[in-house]
Amino acid sequence: MPEKLKLVLVGNGMAGVRTLEELLRLAPDLYDITVFGAEPHPNYNRILLSPVLAGEQTLDDIVLNAFDWYREHGITLHAGCTVVDVDRARRVVRADDGTEAAYDRLLLCTGSRPFVLPVPGAGLAGVIAYRDIADTQAMIEAARAHRHAVVIGGGLLGLEAAHGLRQRGMQVTVVHRGQWLMERQLDRDAGKLLRSALEARGIAFALQAETQAMVGPEGGRVQAVRLADGRALPAELVVMAVGIRPNIELAQTMGLHCERGVVVTDTLQTVTDARIYSVGECAQHRGVAYGLVAPLFEQAAVAANHLAQMGLGRYPGSLTSTKLKVTGIELFSAGDFLGGEGTEEIVLRDPEGGAYKKLVIRNDRLVGACLYGDAADGHWYFELLREGRDIAALREQLMFGRQAASRGTA
Ligand SMILES: Cc1cc2nc3c(=O)[nH]c(=O)nc-3n(C[C@H](O)[C@H](O)[C@H](O)COP(=O)(O)OP(=O)(O)OC[C@H]3O[C@@H](n4cnc5c(N)ncnc54)[C@H](O)[C@@H]3O)c2cc1C
Image (tube, rainbow, N blue to C red; front, side, top):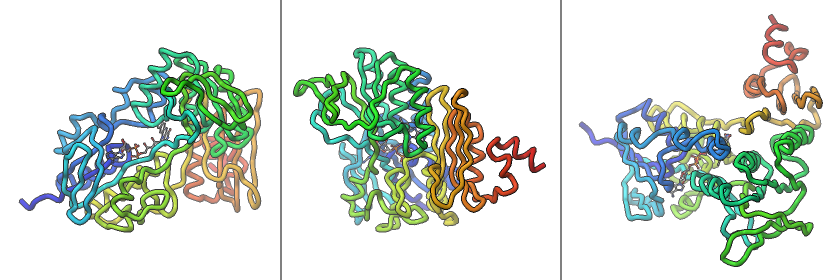
């Protein structure tokens, strides 16, 4: 039997392991696979950390591939092992504990790092980011022992953190720079509805507010967050959810061309070294580094296809859509939801019923959607948007959803 090729995956997260799953389906015997993961856990569904924080699921529920899965597929897993060096000439990776592995193909899937505001006191105990199991456990622990939490950032992640901590009994204030919540996914009207719904659940907000410092004794635990307007919000737990940065430190030390992320081609190979692929939040494709799972899975399919030596697929980039995982709050947004010159808007407002729906159209094509209250048709709108379908014939019924439209065109 000819010797198998060696594939090493750096980063045991959602994008990397998805690529392996696809590869094993296409070419189960092509590679000897070794995986390095900095976290001590098997592959889990990071998205579902929010329901775990809210007490709706357990950590066991969110494991995607348990340790057995690696064994069953003959994959060598080094969990809790961070790769610190890659010698591209010898084609060998080295981890922090000295473990080495040789490769013919390397898959870099190191994800992102949360951005930590460089304010005084950011290093105090109790000031954390929200990215992994360890962060989630720290938040659950803090909720048992303490009363006040401040979440900095009113985007998707920050609001899910705030909801989870509130569910665990903390008094939570969200500090947000923007004029309304989730301004990158929602327009002002939908943002206001969301704020009211979260206030009704007991979450407080400081909008258009600038964080100046974390207050606490040196070397001790945080006690408050001071804002630029002079207010001090009590907090024994501060969660920073102000954005992520592609994790490209290793790629940079390897001499791979990086901009915001590791720059890759349409086959997800790095532009510097064709033996090295990069998929996920660490990769930058056609100028974009994505921060949601759906595009990463599309990338994974193409990379796997190429690694399987089928060479068929090309990744053209992705359109993204957003949902919030706060039980009982339905919202969906995709595309150019703000509209503007050259676009037309169809808007339905039902403030009493807490519903809001805005569709943005350009040249008889749906280009954006922002739904609050009833998001059941989100997927359908997203299909129309992605396919760039001519919606002229559906126009009258479009606002009332897929069912109404199929009746209207029948
Ligand atoms: C709380 C939360 C909720 C989210 N909710 C949603 C959602 O609702 N919808 C959505 O689409 N997306 C959501 N996301 C984003 C989604 O989880 C990410 O887009 C996705 O996990 C990125 O996959 P990835 O493989 O690129 O990175 P990751 O899943 O972060 O995996 C990267 C892995 O690489 C490891 N690593 C890094 N460097 C090294 C190294 N040198 N050596 C070894 N290992 C290394 C890291 O420890 C990590 O385990 C959420 C994220 C969080 C944190």
